[in-house]
Image 1: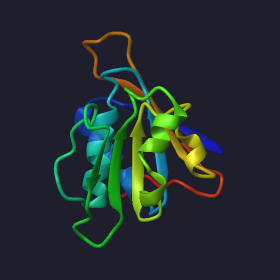
Image 2: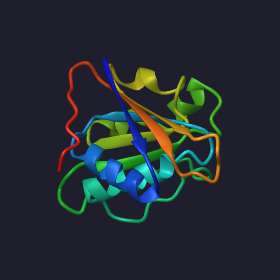
Image 3: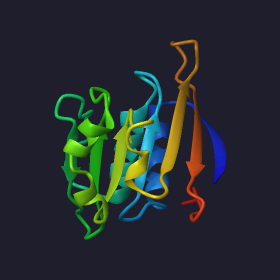
Image 4: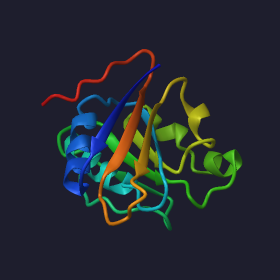
Length: 154
């Protein structure tokens, strides 16, 4: 697996990064987003949704756990999961994510340590917020599955 590190200066650039990442995703991809509250996980997912051209607005699914956004262009669906309130792999199994994996790009916020076993390979995106909370700067580390490559150019 290879990694790249990027600096993202504001929420608009985080959405742009999500759009660029979406061009690299395909049905069956599992993307784990890791970062503290307010790091930009949902903002990145909004960009991924925009890039995948799916229906509906993306909001954090903290209380509903998962939302499915259908494609507007016959592409993959976006399954957006917030695993913050899940405490075990058994609870993840209860979501039955396996049934939608093949036809969707699945993005899981707070999924580290819980969902990696759903696929042989997954994307890991770690977002670290600058310690100065008045600063929008984020460091984003993208771990690319071994069998894949990443092109962030338009």
